[in-house]
Length: 156
Image 1: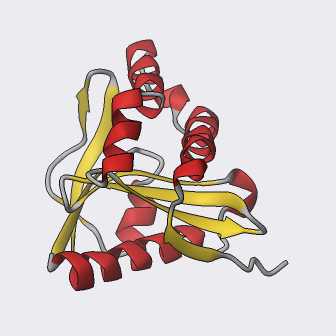
Image 2: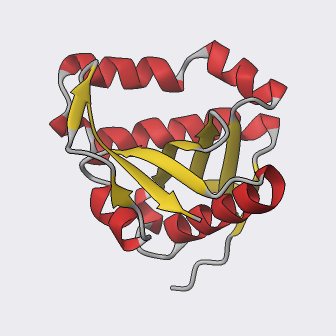
């Protein structure tokens, strides 16, 4: 089945849907390798009202993949060139949505921000995906506040 989706900047009324998608997908694919502290810290992050206010003010970017007015993928950007969250609805895995989100974000960073590199702290589940996209490790896997990740970068 072909997925027809649009990637774009998120509308304000899509914030909750995007964060719910991140939480649901995190629980399904990531939470089992995190400590209870890490799971709680992630939940606190995606439900943080300060983060929402930063989004509304434009200092925390959210881009979405939408199919039939439904958010099926999301990616966020903080500190101008750091991927904070990237999640695709489980039913839409392996349909090019994650790749399209990375491409959209890369184009945005180059054309709108004049940035030539993007970083991410890849979850254990996401490391292989990021490697396939051309990201390289900046160091070994780390754990901070119960969150396990591998620091990576991609030269745009």
